[in-house]
Image (cartoon, rainbow, N blue to C red):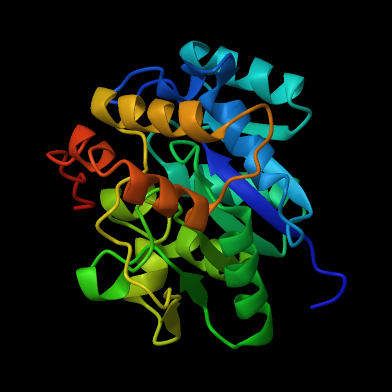
Length: 247
């Protein structure tokens, strides 16, 4: 797929229901969004990074932060996130879309690159390590990466009718394709929750950074797993948190 532009589109807004303003919260002096962008910039497979935020005034800080981090941004509908992705991709001439959410400050660029590389060499409509069913997920929640073509995104944009399909971007693709691949790790780490959705999640991720971040993003899946093996009590911090349902 030489000559095709691969864009990571990172959805971000201040209006989180469970933890408002979470993407602009700071860990060790840097915003969550900066940590996410810095880690995504380490990818060898991604050509462009776009922050997809809303046109609400409360999301002005996200646009300002995107400028500071020298990445593109698009502002659109708050609830029709699918349209935000579509126009973000269209404005940036993206051929391959990598969907990442801004609540993943431990996103692993090595794993993301593996998934993109797999997608590029196969013939699937979407490749993901973020399956909704337990049998589809082996990576910790918080390393979620979905890869699909602009054509698939455009088809979803033109044909999705349900609210959840527009809010969660990719359900229409999953529901209307027989070429879906769930990328799996050789060890099942799905019990780990490293996404940022609650204050307990924030406490856990902050602890991980305090242990492993010393000015450089040089810690990845295996390093964090080792940390949890040495400090098993970390698991207890957000063990009671349930993931929100898509529908």
